[in-house]
Length: 206
Image (tube, rainbow, N blue to C red):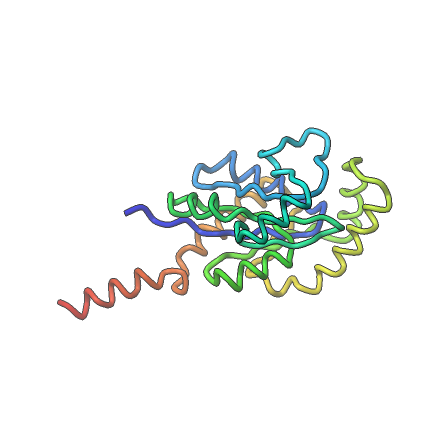
C-alpha cells in the first residue's frame, strides 16, 4: 500500500519568496505536488491560468464556496483566494506531498480541519529586505506595496501558530532545509497514529 502524502501549508510575507522556494522543491525532488489555488485577482505578467492560479470571477468563486468545493478560502488585499478540494486529496492518496501556498487565515482553517497538516512560515531576514524585494518585482503600484507591507505587519502577529519558520536568505540552502523539515515531519508520532495502532495490535496478538 502506497504511503499517503503530507499536506504542507506554506505561508509567509508577500515578497518573502514562497513561490520561488516551492518551484525549487518541485524541480529538485519528485515527491511533491503543488496545489493550484483559485483567485479573483488579475493575472500578473507571465502568469497562466491553471499554472500559477485558476483565475476566476468573484461570482464563480462564491459559487464554489456555496458548493463546498474549497478546503479553505480567505480574502487578501481585496481579492478571494482558495484551495480546490478534489485535486489535493487525489495527490495525497497518490503519495505526493502536497504544497499549499496560502495566507495565514487559510492556513489556520486548514490546521483546524486537518490537524496532521504541516505549517511552514517563510520570512526574509529583516523588514528592509522585504521592502526591497517587493519594490524590485516592479509588478505593483506603490499603494499596493504599502498595503502588502501593512498586511505583513498584521501577519507577523500569527507566526507562532506555525510549526517551523523558514528564513529565506540563501535560496538553495532554504530549498534543502524545507525538504528536510517536510520529510522528517512525516515521521512524527502524532502523524503516524494508524501505524502505531497497527503495530500495537500486532504485538498484542503475538
